[in-house]
Amino acid sequence: MVGQVADYDATVELFAPLRTDSRRLSDQPVRVWPGLYVNTGHGSKGLITCPISAALLAAQISATPAPLPKELIERLDPARFILRDLIRRRI
Image (cartoon, rainbow, N blue to C red; front, top):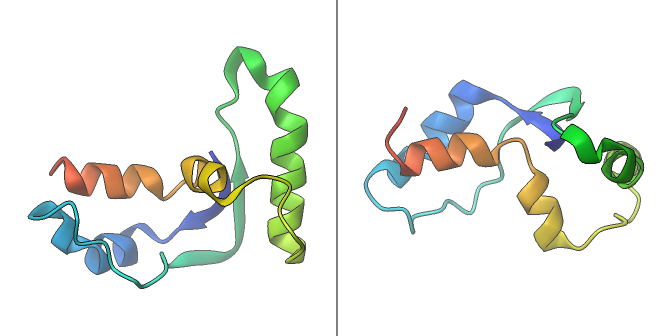
């Protein structure tokens, strides 16, 4: 997980339609906590993944171009777990 931390309650409320239809993604961006970022979950490959993750985080914080493609950044987004749990009706 690398990126800005999502506001859990606001994200669940905004994306609640995912519980009934997983294709109903909102065009609204995920609401996040200002200034709160996370860079975790690297496991045994941390020596390889931490430097590029740190560069991504620095780019996000400073609003400069990201060192990774958009598709990969989306896969690292901490909010993906909230959206996944909504689709699977766990929350």
